[in-house]
Image (cartoon, rainbow, N blue to C red; front, side, top):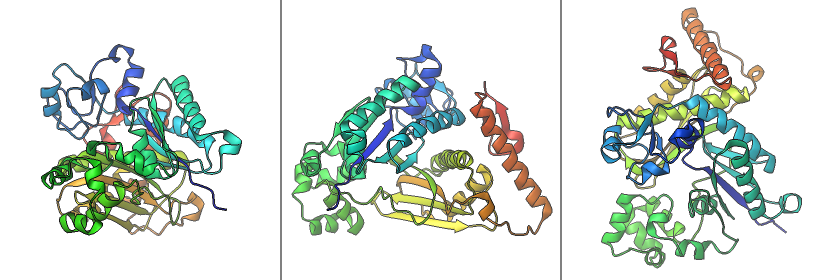
Length: 398
């Protein structure tokens, strides 16, 4: 008899800003904005819950964030610090399951299927996870538990911050019907406006629609998505199936984004997250993957392989950006992701002869420099890149 699947989604609350408040106790209780500057340049990467009360959110231009929260504290992104804390937390989470799927620097799915006899009820596991994260790292996490990754993800958003919500198998439809339209994961402002124009203002209204009707109004992909989520059916967004070992990171935007500068800035952050995890694992890869989900819910994943190992963030970003330029037509995006596929041990990936020795030497210098930077970060020294990924662009920000 097949076991009922059980998934746990752990979401670290306001992670970047919470780490900053942890390291700088005087900032606790204050609106903190990570990314951009107080002079209005750049883009918000993350913000504390105190800043969110002013309407600030990720991917917002810093100038708008400053207008909304004039007394907020702006801080630079310290990706090395966030990644170091994330790696330690993910190591703790891996103790609870043999199948951990990290989907970003601050989120992961744990497959708890079949672990109840050994580890206890999933809710007890969720409580232990939250307690360990708080005691060991001084941070809070919201936990959602359900029979699918999609429901677990929605459950973790149900009572943020510092929440825990369990949706029993068979209760998915009732759970979703108890939510507001604004609570449905993946439903952006533009789609809600179109639904409201059709008189669909509640989840129950959406639930009452025939799939053919929704497809007629929104297209095949979006109509099917809306039909499934209104019934608590996993639309297949968080698939755990992988043809080979890969390392990836993705982010879903609070609002659809079409600004190329913002998209490229976020892509750069995602590339650095992936490369740090690759460094921690010690693997190598030649294949770059880019994932784009448009405003109509259509999703495209593209990839490109290169002759030699991708050894540094600038190489990874260069290839990922090429894919972005080639495959993105400028229509608004609701999700952006990137990754390295077919990650192998260094010994298993034979290097191709380089056509230009100077090119090879330059790439090797960048790889060694980046590894040295990661080691310094793990030792508590935050080195960040100023003005792009150039060898002379690193500086100590401590």
